[in-house]
Length: 260
Length: 270
Image (cartoon, rainbow over all chains, first blue to last red; front, top):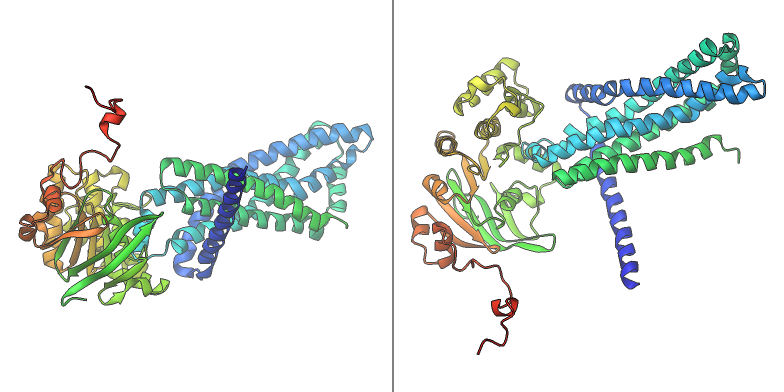
């Protein structure tokens, strides 16, 4: 019994230590002001690898999710004779919830795991150490551009996801199932509020982008520099990011949309 | 700090993960010479380089490099100070996404504002010095282990450092690769006047090029001096290490209970 309590206590202490290390790490990354001349090309390169290369999975997922929403929405709404509201339903679902959340989950799986593996491998092959010994701070040279790239790319990807999803919903609802196009777009325009819905959705994706990128780069930087250590860190990135996104989504939704 | 010492360690104590690695190590590394730090695997040789480079901090004792107490430097000062150091890692540690040329140019691009044509000339000179000018367009994945280390060596001297540290440069090298590295280390030291610290357990190669050597074992220095002085050292432990004897002060058998107990012969046969 005592052993179990002690083990539980140790796990708690380890968790607090880990959060403290991650906080110090974040402070170290953000403390240096990026140099425009050297920092911008590095940021662009990471934006390409984190953002542009994630476009395919984001676009395809957004399209199918929008199409599924169109099918499901039509089936349910037609029971009440309200199939004209399908555009409103798809847009609100995507802009408020599915856009930011699914993009973040896909981002964690595609870009987050790649960031962790890349940084972990750089650590295992002593590239980070050699950079330190050359007088180059890896936090600024390697970590900061990746963190900022994730932070910037996520909202853009979420907006693209929602746009493609709305278009996919239209393909199914309007082109296939015959909902009047004017109703589809008109209801959407009337019910989606730019500030309350679109901006809140973007704020969500900014928060998710920051958290996912932070978890990914920290897990890579802090991993045990062996093949097993990198594998474990990559898994942790996906699991922790997914849990953090879902947990934060509840909190943000409660704050933004809960009428308490 | 002793007269002419570039690096000085006094009573350095260092522990990691609850294990005492150094228990009062004192070493003076002379300026402009090659000093070999030798010792059995796991004796903390690489840790010593990381302490000198400021990647680790000692628990107690003093460590100065060129008169600067490394552990007291602030982060920014430490990074600036490291521009005077070069380090050749055991794995080479080349940046895998950059070509050979870009790897060697990297420190100059980061730390200097030299024009591109001058960087080009310096990179080619450094690669020429290690015999790999013709390999400048290759990627690290296309290099052999020995070539990888030679490129890393060119990169580590790109900024003309005062100090260069070699971490196990001969490990895993074939005889030709080893001969090339021995020649390069000797030539670079004499032509550039570098202070060189060579960590290795390859006794023959290390003693053939070093001016001074120091043997570390069990967390302390067990022998120090010129190669000739070490060869004549009275310590049995030093002689066991230098001559590779399988048994001696470092026992062949891992500590265990009495064999009679393990084989079920306790009480003895009558």
